[in-house]
Image (cartoon, rainbow, N blue to C red; front, side, top):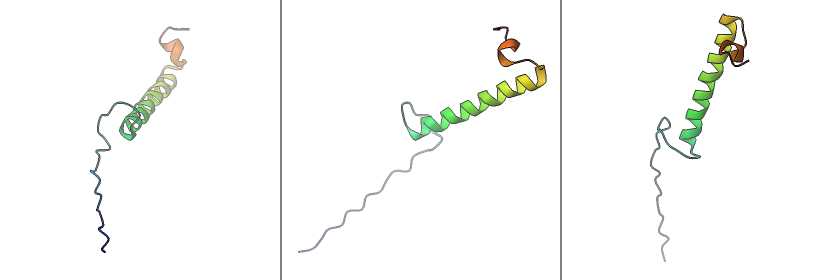
Amino acid sequence: MTNATKTITSIPEDRNGWRWGFTPQAEIWNGRLAMIGFLSAALIEIFSGQGFLHFWGIL
């Protein structure tokens, strides 16, 4: 009796692909957009001398 071995090959996924739901690709994009938003808020506060909410007239 011989043992048959199966080879399972995975399809390489595009890490930069735009996917919806709880996927690694969606989480990567979520992190990137959060970093852009945080940097934008920090730069607004640095250059305007006001808080983010004051700059937009919310407070």
